[in-house]
Image (cartoon, rainbow over all chains, first blue to last red; front, side, top):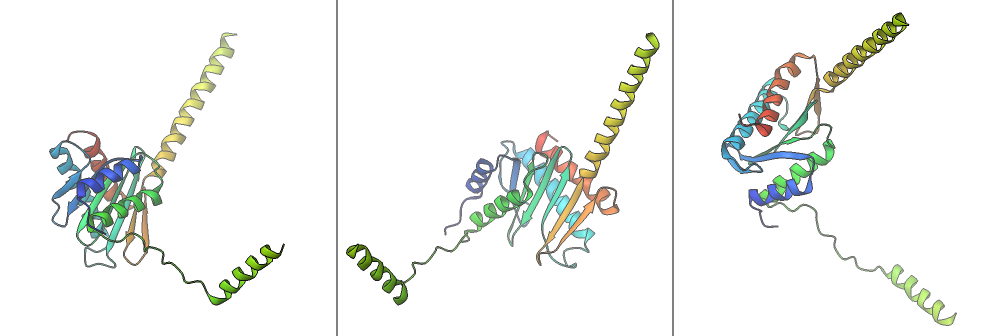
Length: 148
Length: 70
């Protein structure tokens, strides 16, 4: 699969998920690669705030070299939710409406990152060879229907 | 008659206050931060814990940044 441009991946994300109000994709240095918001200063402040939250969460667990690598977080507030997901090279942060379908939002955010990275989302099903047994059963069925 | 109305008013007022307090308590309980790690483990910080008190204001900043010009 070819890598998708971050802006396109984000446009697809916000189109698919009605629960997502705003989202940004950042690179590992924190620079904004794409944003669902038109104004750059707002995108940058969202990116900065999301990074601060993620860094603080990492520090809570002993820093980047701590226990295990933090890969995603969700903060639930009465007026909305914050989601941050990261892969090796990028981070996507999103703000949603209150009480979103958490699993679905995480799935959509991870899919967005995979699209940008150009990863294959699901292996294509392979055509299976018919076994001899299945062929024999099919032939028997055909004979029966021909006789009846 | 007037006493009855006063009593009814007081009961309704008390019920409204109790309802508001319960709603506030419920919505506060709602606040939490869940952290997910590469090994598949998850840690949840509920409202009232020290870590949640540190992380929830930062989450508020993210929501504010998304909704209002900061």
